[in-house]
Length: 284
Ligand code: PAF
Image (cartoon, rainbow, N blue to C red; front, top):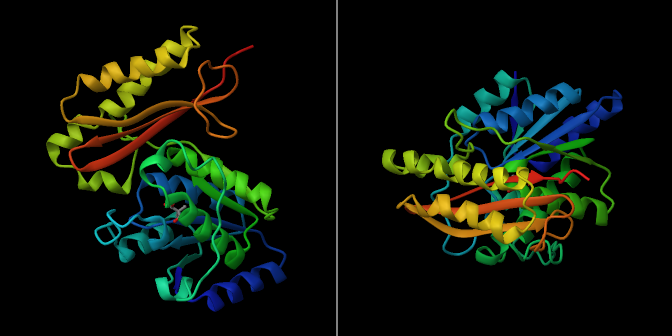
């Protein structure tokens, strides 16, 4: 039976008992409203570790003033049932007051990596992510923590933070889980009307065009971006926010793809902002 615990003290006590028995611990940080993408992370953690903690916390510090903090979908009973069916031991579901002291003064900022891509329109987002992930790593002290590649910039930033601050945890990146038509699974897909949902397939189709160009031997980022933009332009409901080709070290735009690159897009479909991406490494 999966336990839902709401206090830091309680989750620490549970993990301490596991550690005393010499057992390993995996952490899957989430904001809840779990879908098959989260499920794949939990399955991986359950396979890799003796115990798994799934945090369900809609983190206020990573939402900007005009973003969807209040309307972000929440369904704890659904989440608990999915976590239980997937075999994890604990749902950690703190309140904002449990996680954040009112006079908190500490921030966690990974320089540069958060300024491109999503950082341009969401300037405080990655500081909020780093703050909450640092806290979750300190509270749960897992051996491994699992993040989806769908939030590729987040994954790269968390990896760098963990390395720079010497957290004793392995960060495991897991592949994007997609709907049958290619749309990347996301809790925000629930915002889409039927018409918008049909249009949203253009994200993965546009990235497939970019990948085909790279696989054909093209190395100019401008040509890759144009191939993606051409597909997006054919969908009237799609308003691209960015289409970028960046390096996977500092997340800076590249002119030519020489090492591992991340091709990442953010597109508004109606009022909903969706992201998708792929990694590409040229053969040498
Ligand atoms: O990817 C998410 O759902 C969130 O950014 C995370 C990592 C749970 C931090 O709130």
